[in-house]
Image 1: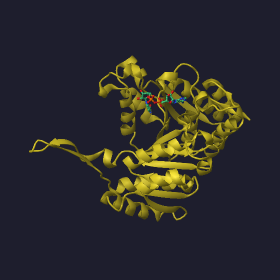
Image 2: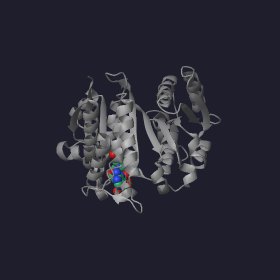
Image 3: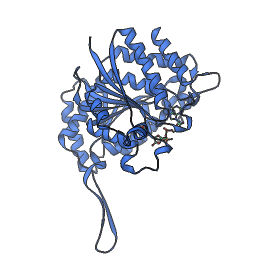
Image 4: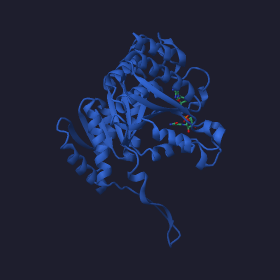
Length: 366
Ligand code: NAD
């Protein structure tokens, strides 16, 4: 039996509450499918600052590197907002991404039919939407050199950022996109601006080249401006979208908001290093923050974190039926009319964070 090592970093605010429910679900899957997950727990973000003075200790980083996957809640809050940038809670996330080499960010945007009315778009436009946006996370415009603001001899200033990608950087993210598409509806849309930006001309060429190894996957290319429009005009046309860092930053938020509910959206960041089952070591977390306004009240929605566990099982451990089981259980609970406060609708029954976790566990246990 494979033993999977998971580092659990609950973090701040609602982090411990939502991660607690996600771990209950993981335990239920462990029991049902006779698996063994070894979970280790450490502090991160503000909680780590309070105890050790820094948001991420070397010891925690070491634990992360020794794990097959990391499950994270959220970090940050008003208590630490006035600290110097170098020791703010959010620095922990940047350090984890860098040290674990997490270059691929996966953000699904799926519409649950019973929640479709929470979207700002018409039901007929979004019903059935199920998109995976894959954003390159460590290159492109956000990291390219040179960058900065310089003084010019005439007293004015010049700001510079550089969009750079090398062939290997594009190859590895393209492979992630095609592999992910294989587990979905087998379609990839690569988004670029190849009509204007030479960097993305290379992007298009390399993605097309990598595609030759994936004849079972349908590949199309789209300019980023058109993609931004198509996401609100006809989002159902997309399965997997793969794109560079800044385009992905913007498009993944646009895709997320189609669903209308921040407490429902998981994410994964995958690295180059593989674990003992030959799959990428990843960090799995909800897309929302630590929600200090509702922390400690047992009203947070744990579903984004529970769905992050499903992504972990699917992408880092290849436990497909177990991941499907979690996702189906979440959908069943919603179909039965159970909601947390953030997604409540007329005629539904509002549950607390713990009760929602329990309801999903009961569904898994059948
Ligand atoms: P937020 O996502 O924490 O909250 C935005 C709004 O959504 C709030 O009203 C909150 O109550 C609500 N919300 C968020 N998650 C919810 C859930 N699971 N269930 C129910 N309601 C939920 O964003 P913010 O308020 O801008 O940031 C709060 C703190 O979180 C800040 O310190 C910020 O830096 C940090 N943050 C952390 C991460 C992360 O850890 N990855 C991401 C974003 C923000």
